[in-house]
Image (cartoon, rainbow, N blue to C red; front, side):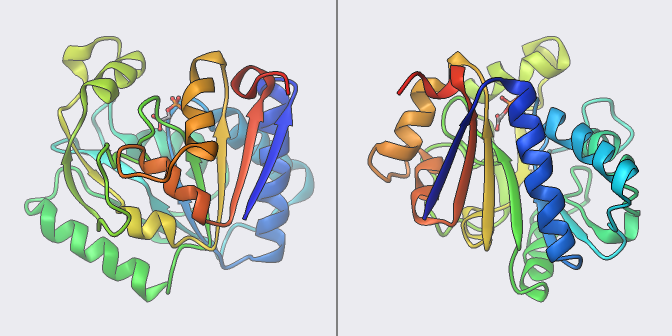
Length: 241
Ligand code: PGA
């Protein structure tokens, strides 16, 4: 079930996304959220924090699941995706550490940390709302192509495309870790609702393939065609018609 919203620009995308997530939280104050980092959702998160300040959104019973983390990177490293989520989402929304299920990049045994994460997802029964961006290669989290829809949470190697796109965050390719922990496709695809935010001309082709192309492991995001999906795209990302 697809709900596609095409809005004028990134500002409108961020506001629409924030309004939707805020109203979801009001209706589901104990929801389990799966929260992406990346550049696209940042405007949504800051507008959501502004809504909380204005309207007193209660976030104290939410649970937040981290979507992905670089392998070998601890929370204090400037490249930590947890650190990025903490600054952009957890702190501005007043979400305490105890409400968060992390993917610890610096765990002694990352594989068993991934299994523990999946147990926490099962304990929550499933993710209620996933907030995702779209990788230029159609990855979800770091489920790089090819990714089967049943993949569990695990350690993966980053694709060349992801190393390239992530170099924008950290200033150079050399600074991008080569492996990561990612929430599995099964966790992502079993979310009861998903909001996918997509901005910019450079995402147009991958967005079309995601929504209108064949459902295939070669484009992991294409499995979202089978999910309860809301896409918020700006005009640059969707095109004219
Ligand atoms: P972006 O990343 O929001 O920075 O474009 C999306 C992704 O790679 O999943």
